[in-house]
Length: 481
Image (cartoon, rainbow, N blue to C red):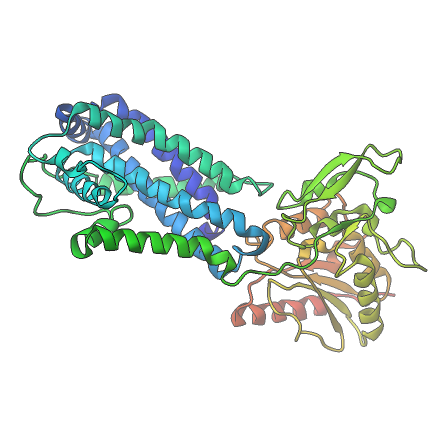
């Protein structure tokens, strides 16, 4: 239920509110210079009980979308989820944000009050500064020179042109991601909607005074989420405003290469061990695995193919492969159908065997950690052995069975917080596999009381809580026979 874990889906939810409320408001709106302001005033005051609330919802949901986009962007930045193979989503996300801002600006323009007049004049001043535009656009807004044709053009951009471009950019933004959840949890969506509704009732959106041709507006109440560029135009001039906006945009788009991130070697397929079940393709968070017709002549119809430009080397596919069972090839090198060349399933099994052999005392536990969750490297003790994974989703459920059958009294699994996996859905797949809800499933013979999960961040307080949970889990165990 943490909204910070659902910023993308919340943004889509806000866009739905904007769309529905915008369609309703447009029913009453007149797309001409003379009728725009009176029609908006009618919506706001004469039909305040529904149309006025719809206008306010349209306004506040638009602001909420910008807020969620900005938080989403900076959260991905500070969690280092924007470089390497993830560069594409970041690179396409920046122009998407600016397109949302332009869409909001044209919305304020259509009200045609004094704020709209200010926006129109400042926009015209910025456009006139560009040498490639020959005519003086600003004169269209002086002494009542704006025509219905120009106003209809702005209405077309806001109601159809820009929204279509936004849909295309949003599709491009998420095109390299699989298993996308476009809808936030129902309770979270309900809470967000009720908050916007309460705000719309308590502080309804209203217009400024109507446009007065030849007179500059004196008092303005800016929407700083959308109109923050215009004070720069007033203070610094259009040249500096363009320079700052362009510089910030270019810097943001170049961030994935300042510096670039070197990814680990991508997953490799071993066809001799692959049954073509396709579970690795189903589980990949980035769509880097696709199933293709079999190329080795075996009876299985398909084989996985890895796109190295999309693979983050998270290892989730290894955890999803039935061939990753450590009970196989006991006296030789274990080969899985798909695995990480830098951290094979065989090397994981050998590390587990070494750690099991070193365990002493009673209530012996293997702690499986995640390199993106809490730092567990210092939590090893006489009765605890630590095995760190690139993602908890790399852990095959059969490895849990293997550990318990070979000397451990319990298995403790940790990693990124629930709903906030560094690799998006690795911890979700692990939970479902252990619960028997997703292939490959943990066998029913495994005593569930000997297996537990607790996921935390790497903050000192949560690491301390993890240590307490680990010790409590050990005390609850009965030593194996």
